[in-house]
Image (cartoon, rainbow, N blue to C red; front, side, top):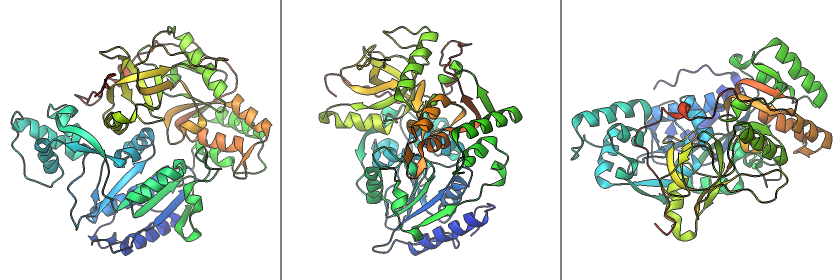
Amino acid sequence: MTLPSVTFSHDQAEAFDRIAEALRADGVDLEDGTVRPPGAGKGQVLAVTGKAGSGKTLLLSAVSQAAQAAGVTLISGDYEPKKTQQRRTLAILAPTNKAASVLRLRGVPATTIHRILYTPVYDPEYERIAEWLAGEGERPVIEGLTDAALDRAHAFYQTNKSVPGALATAGLRGSDFITGWKRRDDPLDMGLIDEASMLDDRQFDDLREIFPTLLLFGDPAQLAPVGQSGQMVFERLAAPQVMHLDRVHRQDADNPILDLAHALADPALGFEDFERMVEDKAKADDRVVWGQRVEVDLMARSPVLVWRNATRVRLINAFRSVHGAPEDALLPGEPLICDGIELPLKHRKKRLDLEARGLIKGAQVVYLGPGSKPGFSRLHVVGAESPQVSAASIVKIEKPEEEEPFIPYAARMGATFLHGAAVTIHKAQGSQWPEVQVFAPDLFVAARMGRNEAGQPLWKRLAYVAITRAETRLIWVVRNRLAKPSVPLGVEDLATVPAAPLALEVEEDGI
């Protein structure tokens, strides 16, 4: 077999060889391109760690390509072929929609952990189309669907590998072919988990139930999940199970953003010295900006990253104020963050519907406008494969110095949202944006307090995570000021989305 054409550094090659050896023992030979059923009691957990720019994503992609070339079936969140005794399976997962979408933009077919925990139930007639698209059956004849429609679906699937997206191009709505969702009953084989530093113990236990073989990819310099005592799940593994990538690759070597992130590893570096370093980088390279104020235009799609919750609330209210947003309503284009689903247990099916479509805690959402019923909202779920959702909503606008949030409108139950023009650095983990604003006065406060986490000054961990959220441009905001908007809020940039989205509406008086 021909392995993926990838030029590895020495540490990447060593990690790939160790992963290949582990998978070979589990019945998947990446070198020979063969698979066999797993043996009894096989399976293990391995971790690949490294800082930003060390090539973790490249390695993850190479492992996934080699496994698929060997005959392993990739399991996505939207369709799963019928299980057979011989088939070996692989899923590529991330903790959040945004983190999964970052991988997909890099050509890695990732989905979220929630989308693997909860699987769709297809209408039997339309499942025949899904089987055909996945190469598991003959071309079907479906009443009401023309050959041209099936050809469009097939052409879409060859490029995007999304069954719902393919069916949408054939003119079908999600509610035509997905009848519901269920918690996964049967285990899979192998799981490749990106952004593993974000996993908490419960998520890790869920993944261990599903995947006998887990490969974790994570950055030990990031912030541990809240409540984990500063420890990440891969830090509990035995030394032979962990492979560390310590080389920064050539394509990242001249990146001033990563230069700043890596400089934070110097134990002698103080906050004032670091800020001088940021200012010097800004004078030499326009990819780093020494900002005198928060740019409000960026906040609609790229939140300001802060440490303190009080700063977050103040910036959100300033953002709404300069846009002239009324207190009793949202403007189309306002960013939101899903804060969870408030539904009683009897509505478990609707909870699964919403979570499987991306409305999980921490999901980034843009408000499109009111729904067809009081308390309903039309929403764009950032990073979701089918982003258009209609749902009963409870929107909370927090106010400075006020204990209870202001609620401009609300359904009796449904998805709850906080405003998303500013977010804490903890919440931003796993996400990336082309341009990122970091509110430096908050990090100065963290530095003055002298707090440590896992043996490192907290301000350095916060700065590292915040800086590495920026893909192409970092704005280091040094003053507590807000610029005026140059354009009004809008949703025109979200117009190019898959056709015929599934509308998920939670009835207030039952299902």
